[in-house]
Image 1 (cartoon, rainbow, N blue to C red):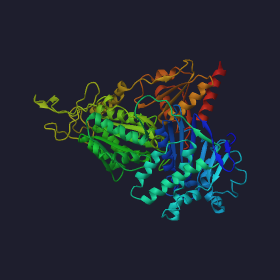
Image 2 (image 1 turned 90 degrees about the vertical axis):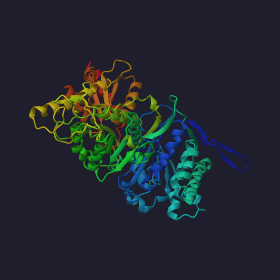
Image 3 (image 1 turned 180 degrees about the vertical axis):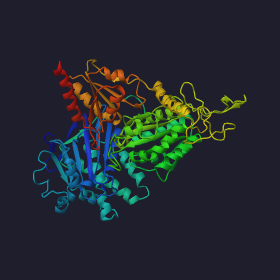
Length: 638
């Protein structure tokens, strides 16, 4: 930062900060889980999105509703990356750390590069609180932070002073410190403020004193930035160029909810969600429960089994049944998934993956449910598996899952993860009319002739192209039929223990899923030079880190190719050919190499697994370094 530009008059000193434009900034808000850091980050994100920057966010919070105050396990953070160009990740490390207490500083300091900016609330830096996290001395005084640019303020005291005129308890007054900090950061990075003022007015409309106090604290924080001489620079990040259209900020869970609604709308069917709340999938249920106005029916079931059972029942009745869950819930749904496969009814199952096994780390991300999605059922039980690559891509993936489920009369698993679910980015609102209709093609008339030559209905007579069976809504005259989990007789659907029939039906169900490959586009390879020898193949949310790290690699003059899979079963028809075209295939995953295992088994080719299982997105910097080693090692072989 440069010298403080000041204009000196005879008696009054005016502070005029230097104005500096930046291409990108990563800010991490961190505090106790009761300090409102998620709200603060979300509001900064909303204003930044409305300003026109490209954004990517990473909320990171403990699963405990209220961990012990001031402890390391209780630290909650929200990281925001915003830029004047296209970005694909929330960033590896923050440029700015806003720490609201000693625990937040200690938990996040290791991620801050030397020279990074720290804005810290000094109010809680007492001997007792420092001892609580194992600090013998105050890091604000002992040189621990000398490698950083530190701005230490009593934010709590300043906020409390700003709201002194309101009739608040001491506790409520101190809670406004997050709004004071938001106001200060809004000034420092030249953010709009009207949206936050409107948000506060609406959120606390029923509590006028709380509303006015938060507004006052926010304005006081902004004014503090304007008037204090602590900051020598005020920063600007210009809007990012984007294709024309209407945009909004969207998280992966909300995008999934909208995609499910769009899929049902395009099929002309009622959307039914039967679900049991589970982190990090619950927001899909929350969002859809608000949409009775467009015919969405939601049912909060007593458990995961009831959730999928009700959704499957809704599909049997002619609705589009959906159930949402996370890893532990997927385990409980496995038997009913088999029932959906046996009855050959449409069903969309959204698995928002989190760190496991068992209850694992509920608020942290992982990609370790792939093998469960592919094979986690009894018997030969194939079904399509799709994975979204970004928060906004959750919309398109959900629409495709609905289309596939209805067209092929099958359960479809859609995989996202905690990183996509809670992260947000700009989303160009699509033209619903441009999305192809989905034809449910309900059976409405006889489709066969019985032994006596009379017209009859065969519920397991299949479409010769898709192998999808006839789907008759209960109550359709003369199309009555038996349903259940016991093996079906070919065509007529009656219970059958005939060995030959069981093998025929098993192979028919497999052939139906295999045939979906006709709807799966070839995997596209991004290989700008055409000379790359290393292919980086990803799926799901690794798209962001892979894209960011390979962009950096190409800037060093190295050639590298990338490809990304949405369809994990069936896989694109050309995938084997693509894998064989490169000397080295690297597969980054947030698991111990599940896709790599599948590729080796299916294509009998060697791939290199790049595994990270930390509950966090893959580090761009680490992936870049390892890919450099892979590429350079190949060069030395010649």
